Image (cartoon, rainbow, N blue to C red):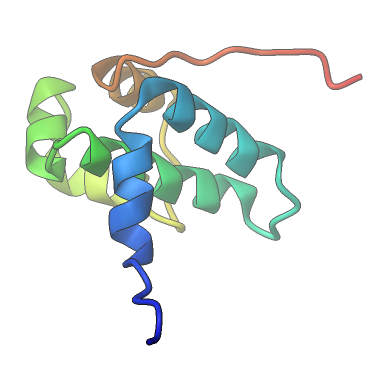
Length: 102
């Protein structure tokens, strides 16, 4: 009997519903050795929003941002302003922090 594999995204979203896991996930993405850490982080942020049951439309409304602008901002090619990022994080119950690189 073969083991049925679980859908990766469904499993990820289930785990990301927990705040501690979501924080660890976002920090791991930022600390990774990806060639595009910013794009990966923005995509990870979309996953966290989806795990919390938020659509991009709802997130844009709650954060008082334009839906199309939010889609662009939270894409691999996105370059959100700090205000946009802090609004989105705030709606997700998160905030930015700075720590020593040493």
